[in-house]
Length: 84
Image 1 (cartoon, rainbow, N blue to C red):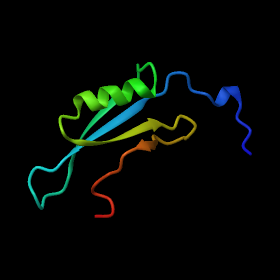
Image 2: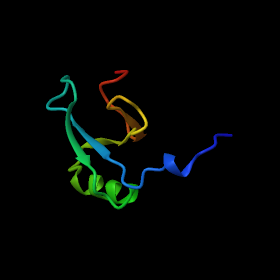
Image 3: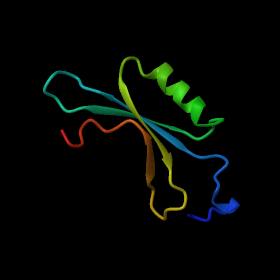
């Protein structure tokens, strides 16, 4: 079991939404990346992403503030360029 402290909690996380679109068959997927740092919660980010997807697939990530590097943790979706 992991001991989680209250100080580990991030009340205002920074989310990232990567929309993916392929310009034409046989081409690599291109991304349109958005940072959302004023969201009320993950459900509002999902609603925003769904409303702005315009048929594109997307990944939802959250910034890992405990890391010394600028890194994000994947919450949903996948990068279509990886493993294809």
